[in-house]
Length: 414
Image 1 (tube, rainbow, N blue to C red):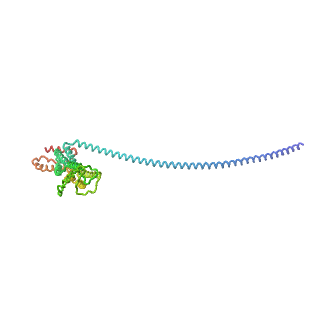
Image 2 (image 1 turned 135 degrees about the vertical axis):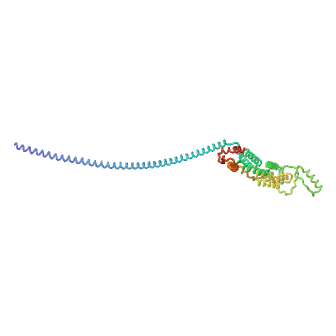
Image 3 (image 1 turned 90 degrees about the vertical axis):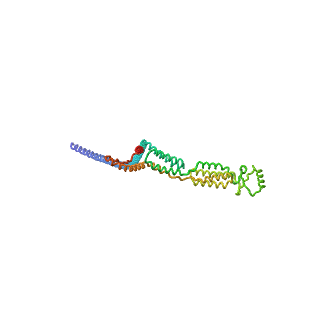
């Protein structure tokens, strides 16, 4: 019994053990399936996450590439702007440098010019201060010679020209400068030429023309015109072929018509009656011709002067009646046309040119004086053998020394 119990217990134990092992097997299977499912879900989730990461990585990479490309483009643009700015700065630097150099050159030129002008002014003042009375007289003579040339060729004033030449010669004589001797010779020639010039009375001729111009209204027109005030005729005519009875009748008729009509006798046919405006135009034309003659007289234009007088005479002969006023005016115009006007005057500028080159004349005078002194010094040399012969030295003096040389030469001569 006991063995049976033990055997049953063993069988029951094995049955429990088998049942327990089968339960463990299915439990293990279930656990394994759970593990496989969990692993599959994890792998699926991992793959999903990986795909999502790859998509996000590509998008981020694309955006970053685009941003990098944009940054590169901006960097290139900034580099271009920097290059343009550097070029502009370089150009401005060159322009500024060139402008500064030009301004510096202009400033230096102005300084040099101002310095030169100041030096010339100082030298001029020094020369003025160093001048002697003789130099002032020579300068005064030069001014008078210039005035003489201007008065002769610009104005035609021969009298003033002669007086200016004589005054210049007087100044040169008082200066005592030996170098002006040739200038005085030329001035003497110019004075002689000026004295031989016949000077017309320009003022008197102008006054006569003006008087004739005022007498134009007194001339009687050849053609009658309406509106003319009535005046008795002053024309006297001689009719030798008339009888004394005719003269009596004519005188009685004139006495009755006196103050009513004006009777004129002319050899020219009367073709028309002019208006007062036309009559005034004829007189004004004569005044214009006389005015042209006056202008030509002042300007010393011989051709226009003679032409204007001839035109005036022809105009008077064509449009005005031959009476006493007509003949008197024609006679005055003939007398004026016989007077010649000098439009060309001699050249008297040689003395002025010589005086402006006074230094050369002084040098030539010193040389001539040295040549004259040398033979005399050679003649007296044997009588004084121990005395050395003084050399003749000719130096180019400064303006102040040149100004003092006339006084020294004058004192030596005295």
